[in-house]
Length: 285
Image 1: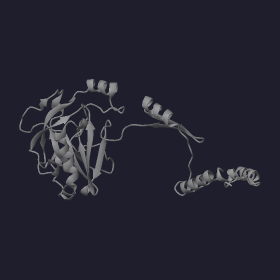
Image 2: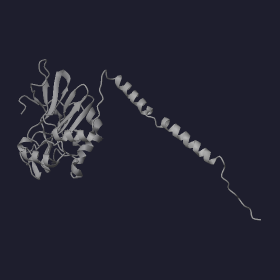
Image 3: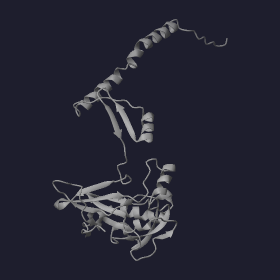
Image 4: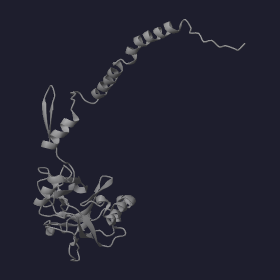
């Protein structure tokens, strides 16, 4: 007689499933209760109150806010207590009338600014706005190989380069020669002091008199010759190295890459080098 295996359904199977479903329904609100989010909100409020004596919460739609900023350069924020009109503008070396200052020994204030004549860097990052601004600029270098001179050929950024070389420059604003200001009790920025060329590592143009342009096109070159192409400005315990051109432009100008690598690989030599003597002129020209 063949063996037979008979499966039978336990009598408690259906009642057990029903009980489990009821239990899940009753427990679900506890698992998915907003009390967890509320507790996080309470902790956030407590953290904020430890820093600010008074504050207001404002929710902004990121897409709408970004569109308003692109159209007008402003951001309007309304709170229950006040209306805020925020004017946004670039605060870096691309911004018009940029001015950076550093107070050094003796109350001397060293600074560098961007000046008129170069092509302003569009906040839109390019396109028609940048093209229109470039057409109105006095000095333009729209992708040109131009000659430069190392004002400090011993500087680590100049390692491996001759004193006279060339770089690839795009349309940028121009840097002014840094100046030294005497800080006075009644005025801190109204009087320009003499030029201080000690922070200039590389300057535009060939000091030996060779033509500025190697290939490409240049307009208004007389306004750029002698201005900083690379700056090394000691600040606090470190240094700020600023390029007045893009040494990584679309990965095309590989001969300029070494300038950046020199700055990165030899950072200790840059920081530990003695501060150069101030090379000032009384008339700033």
